[in-house]
Amino acid sequence: MFSLDKSDNKDGDSMIEVHLYGKLRRFAEDPDPTSDTIVQAEAVPGDTIGRILKRIGISLEEVGSNVFLNGEYSGLNRPVKPGDRLGVFPDDMQLLYKWYFHKREAGDERADSC
Image (cartoon, rainbow, N blue to C red; front, side, top):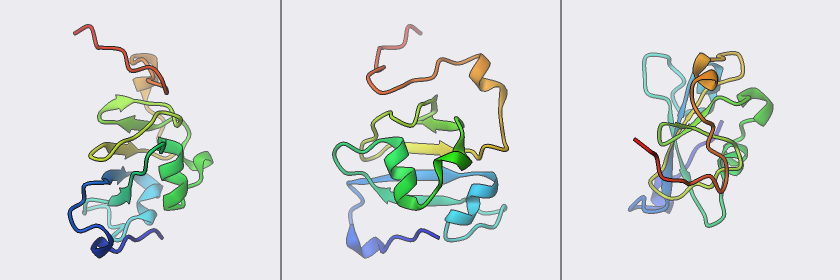
């Protein structure tokens, strides 16, 4: 289980929120399905989604392609920065979104046309 001593970073300026779902809830401090299962992780320069997940202790094989960065379907090599929010679903919770949304990868930071 991953835990973070919040006294290490009192202002949270370098933190990101990692929201865990399904069987990945076990990596949160309180894995109860009725509670928010959010892990605070420090984002350091050069971090990617995959690096953050590995640091928490989540095997990338358990994640599959079920990752959202700030609400956008994203690849594991996409960079993260402080203040970002990750939503991570396990491989056994495959969703239909991948047929309808463009997966954002590292370097794919184009402006949305909407």
